[in-house]
Image (cartoon, rainbow, N blue to C red; front, side, top):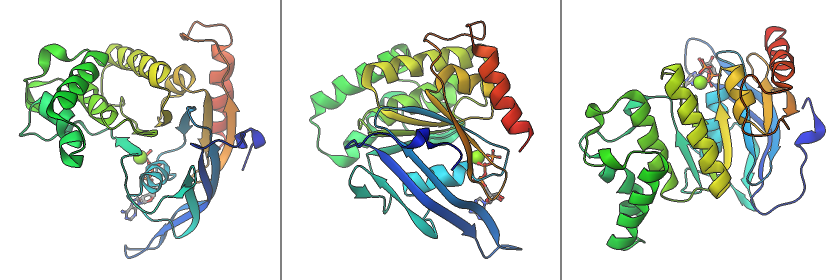
Length: 261
Ligand SMILES: Nc1ncnc2c1ncn2[C@@H]1O[C@H](COP(=O)(O)OP(=O)(O)OP(=O)(O)O)[C@@H](O)[C@H]1O
Ligand SMILES: [Mg+2]
């Protein structure tokens, strides 16, 4: 591990990733994707992960989500080892097609609550309304996914992820495929959501600028098999812009780490 600032204080919602390794077998060759990745993320932290293409970022996120099983090592949220997917860890992907195409925006956002059957109809209606307001989609609640832009689909996916109040929001390049203006507004909305609810956010991006705008800490991974090369703390005051004092220094530091990978 490149930096001991990852070791935080003991907290009930801390995410601990310890010595996680993962090799994919069964293809043309065995492919070591992750090698002894260790990282501790405090409850409510906003961590961005940067790394070269193919270094195992998505694999790591999928392991935390419980969608992939590490070969060795352990992932623990609070006191509970991750053994599979759960409503405490929700993923928002890059893919615009993560919504159910036969359901409206409103129905997509309500879906996780309908599935776990714990909320009343009124609670579901109120939650959906609140979450759509958070991402500015109220007017489009009756639209189907194919009637939305890419940015709107990502907004709906975020609103849906929030319905179950996940402890950890796992985001895999969620804004990579939208135009730069939409990206900026999505970033601002995400920061507002984080400041309001303080979920732990693990956010993968290829974009150094985005990592500096969003992350409280930024982890840089080495090329495959991925390890954590270094973690930097980003204390630039929010709201941040590319013109903020200290922004370019952080950008340069991260860019150098990535270039010399
Ligand atoms: N299901 C799988 N089966 C076999 N190999 C896989 C599988 N998933 C990922 N890999 C391999 O593991 C390595 C890491 O992939 P991963 O998708 O985690 O990288 P990444 O860092 O997210 O890349 P990118 O930045 O391009 O999204 C790659 O070499 C990939 O080919
Ligand atoms: Mg990926």
